[in-house]
Length: 536
Image (cartoon, rainbow, N blue to C red):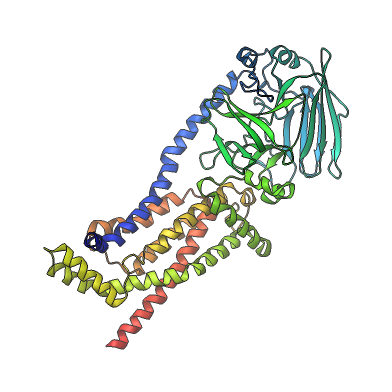
C-alpha cells in the first residue's frame, strides 16, 4: 500500500492543480450555461402560473392537531387573492422613516415603497416590493370555506386613513364584519419600518395569515429566492421557488421569510413560536401561512435584507440573509467586511484590505508552497534521471523520488494547498457580494459605480486576466506533459471571459489577490536566484 501511494506522488501536484482549476471553471460554466437558461424558463412559467393562481386555504393540520376536511381547505373562492389592487382600494397609508405601506380594503399590504435614496431602480424611481398580481402580506384565510368566501367580499374599516410613523410608533386598527364574525387587526408601525400585529376573531375560528409571496424586485439565477423558516432548535430550512411539490408544516417556528436576492417579507415571534405551513402555488413556489386559533400575535418586516437593520430588530433575524452552501464562512466574512468598512468608508477599498489580510494570514503556507515549487524546479533534472534510471520499476522510482524530496526539503503538494484553501474563501466572497444589499450601488473608483454588478467597461476582468498570465509566467512550472502546459496557458483567457460578467467586487478581489501573489512569487524567485549565484 505504501509503495502504491509513493508511486502516485510524482504526478499528484499536477493532478490536484488541474482538479482545482477544473472545479472553478465548472462552477462558473454551470452558472451561465445551465442555471441561467433554467432560471429564465422558470420565470416564464411563474408568470403564466400567476395568472391562473386560485385562492385556497392551505391543506394543513389545524393548530389543535385535528385535521380539517380537504374539501373545506381546497375550495376555491370567487375573488382571487392575486387580483390587482387599484388606488381606490387603498384604505390606509402608513409612512415610516424607511418605507410607505399601503393597506387595501381586504386588510392586506397592497404595496411597500422604500423611501431611502439608496433603494432606487435604474430609472431613479423608488423601489416597490410587490407586483400587482401576487399573494399579499397579512391576508387572512379561514379554514371554514364558507366564511373564507364571504371574507373576500367584505371590506375592512380603518381607524385612520393616513398614519405618520416616521418619528414615533403609531397604531392603526382594521376591522372586518363577516355577518357578525368580527375580525380585528391591531397594527403598530415603527419608524424603522417594522410592525407588530395582533389578529383576533370574535368567535372561535381557525384561520391562517400569510406573509405574502416574496418580493419580486430581483429574482435571478445568481442567488436563491423562495422561503425560509427558522425553528426553535436553530435549524434553518429553505424551500426555493419551483421546488415545493407538497404542503409542508412546521411547529416551533421563530421566523418565516419569503425573499428574493436583496429583499424579504418576514414575520417573526421569538417569545411565542409560530406554527407555519408552506403551500405550493401552481408553479411550485412556496407560500407561507401562520396558523391561528381565534387569535395570533407576531412582528413583521418588509424591506431590504440589510444586516445592521435586521440585527437591530433581533440578532437572529440576520439569518434571513442566506449565502448558500458557504453561509458558515460567508456570514462571518461579511461581519468582518462590515467592520473594516466602518473604518475605511468605501466598500471597494474594504475588499482590497480584506484581500491583503487573507494573503497575510495565508502567507506562511504560501511561502512554503512557493519555496517547494522552486525546489522542485531545481530538482527537475535529477527527477528526469531517476525516471530514466527506473523506468521499468515504478516502486523503486517512487522510493527514489521520495528520498530526493526528503533530502532537499521539497514537497510536491506544497504548491497546491494555498490554492485549495482559496476555494472556500473565493466562493464565500462570491456569495457575500451577490447577497449583501449593502454592496448594491457601492462605488469604488471612477468607472465602477456598483460593486455588485459587472464592470461596465471590463477593465477589472482584463487586468485580472493579465495578472493571471503574468503570475503563470513567473511561477516555476515542473509540468512535463505538453497538453497540461497548453491547458494552463489557456486558463487566463478562459477566466477573463467568465469574469466579464462577474460582480466588479469579486473581480477586484481576484485581481488584488493575483497582484500580491505575483509580488510574493517575484520575491521568492529573486531569493533563489541569489542562492544559485552564491553557489557558483
